Length: 150
Length: 150
DNA sequence: TTGCGTGCAAAGGTTTTGCATGGCA
DNA sequence: TGCCATGCAAAACCTTTGCACGCAA
Image (cartoon, rainbow over all chains, first blue to last red):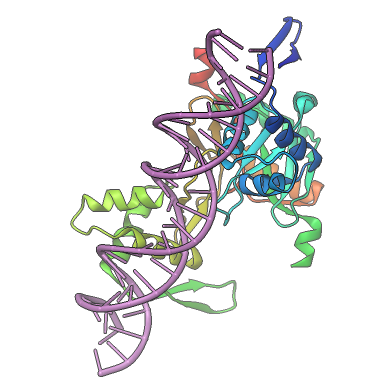
């Protein structure tokens, strides 16, 4: 399997993604079907155990790690939870460079299209010598709805 | 032991903090000496094992949980690390709130003490109705060193 | 003296690894 | 066919918990 990414006038970038196995398809298919929601490794394994393609927990971990490396999934930790959360990004995850806001209460993800945030990215690059990857960076906090409920 | 907090014209708040033990002093003293940097439970235990007041790992965990509850420490997770990070805040509670920058190449974490970032937090709160949790938010990207190497 | 804090050991969970087997290309 | 991926089991961790003992107040 080969994923093809269009570069910025620098031609084509091919990334080897390894063999195509039904286990990998099952994992990626489930993650994509979650539509932005996250799942833990054990949740994925439990779900797949109820399908016609059950996948061993170690394979789940190994595939998740690989998919994170390929940029198809994102891994993060939610405070108070010892297990890692995985979320589907998709192959177009590179496209529009913008940050995300994720509510720690309801789990909702909002796209932040904002000049101020873009300026901060430039500021960090110039003043702090750090090139921020906006796609992978998520602002955690609480959305308006959840703030009002508490 | 009783900590006294000055309220906003609402008088004095006293918080019971339990017994004063040398183990608690050792943990809190070490955290305060880190000057805003973070440490994991095992790092704390390892450090104290080399002093004249070694502290058992379970006591470290129990004290850390208590100190977080008292607001003297802050707990958060950094992606790619399974263990929790603890950070000294101090009795004024205001000091150390800042974002983190994590390099996707070398894994290094840098503390971002930056007015521009603080302003963005205020902007997002006002204009996007989202209360950003700076402590849990990590900017991913590439640090200067790794940018130069590639 | 009372009861909380401590340390040890064990348990519970998550994640990683070794190794033989199975399956993709 | 040549490797890579898989699955099982075991190991390696991180964190929590039970229990007897020690120590602060």
